[in-house]
Length: 325
Image (cartoon, rainbow, N blue to C red; front, side):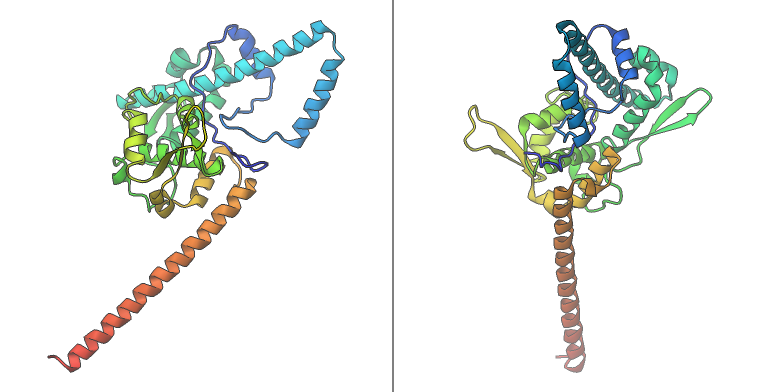
């Protein structure tokens, strides 16, 4: 389970959900309310929000039935508006990826016409969120090169984890997007307390706009990639959860991930998505610090062993010079 109050989540756009009616009402509700991105993972409710909710609940209990229905309708409209914004971000990410395959520039007018529609007033927020997911998840940077006409291109230059050189991309198909997907899954597992149910991983993919069993032009068949590549290459462990009925399975970090991927860098990846510092999640941060210390000690031992072997070889060479036979 996710640690509290150190729970964490990755701000992944929600791609699927019920189609909601009343678009104009939804847009007004979203514009009027605070535009805070709902996370696909459980999150801690700040104390001030809890207090506000208690006050709101007390006020609501004093309302007439008609007033209570009005408040409930407004809350439902806000939830629908948030869901619609999430779907729009996910759809825009997929649209940009498909357009990039043709290597043709993408204009703001195209994005508004084919994806954003009447949410065009929220274009800055939508494009900013889409750019973050393109960068951190898929390894693409969204660049604007024609400010007058709002023209964009995707640059396939970034790795999902900056300065991470230990993971061999060739083992993951030689491309950043697959590595980005692996890091997303490892981040989910880490923030969930070092294990995540299989259903939670598939739900995360859906919120990315990626259907687990449907072909994706970047990942192939995502479920097959995870089960046959990530699990077989020991980046992920996959096992049945004991005493579950019906049976459930879960993922955890595999031995190869523990060797090659730093927990601190995965936590840093999560923190970048949230625009927070890693210390925001104290439990995960302390664990990551301990992991860094273990890595430093292992590295020091390896370097000491290498130096000892080098000295032994040097002594052997010196004796061979004195006694050539």
